[in-house]
Image (cartoon, rainbow, N blue to C red; front, side):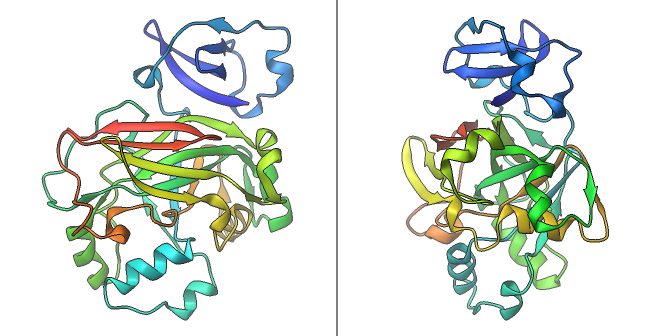
Length: 287
């Protein structure tokens, strides 16, 4: 299923997207994290056009955001631009940082340009939404804790990030001013056809800025799988419903990696669109 939350006539509703202009609105009593095909059995889709501006963040409440660092090509190229080799420790543990949850934007929402940067960047990512709580989850059981996958954009202030990384506690403020998620969650049962193994998925993703393609990559290139990320994140702590596990930047998925000398930093008025034939389209304008 493709599960979204939408503003329908001023009322927030959870819906199941059936096509580009068909959806099934669910009863308010439906439990968001326990939705199944039985929930919508016998219900006829409504035929109605909708657009990005109708979508809300697809998670009722984002309880935390852990942003990992899992694509080797991205890590290698980004570190090389800073004059750094690959850290051996990167191959030993799937590292992450926490991002803020107070500035999470849906598809179609404008993104305010932060006044503390002159080097605004996007990061093309895919996120897993936790749908079942758990602690010390083993890799072989991890997928049962994931509700589904969605597109995500980790907006980044690169000039501030460089300073934070030198201090040794970053990134922090350079990341927590905006995260985009959506437009909907594609549940794991719908990803079976693109599963290369039990926990790796062949999901192409592209990013366009003002209609020009900047980035093109695939989720299958993750060095650490989502199951491994869930296993590591849950060590000694409890994952909760609504926790978001982000993949980190997909290879070629940001201006920093591509090179700002050829692909300039983002400016006000730029429209950033991430597209996937599996996960939909996440679009935001910088204002």
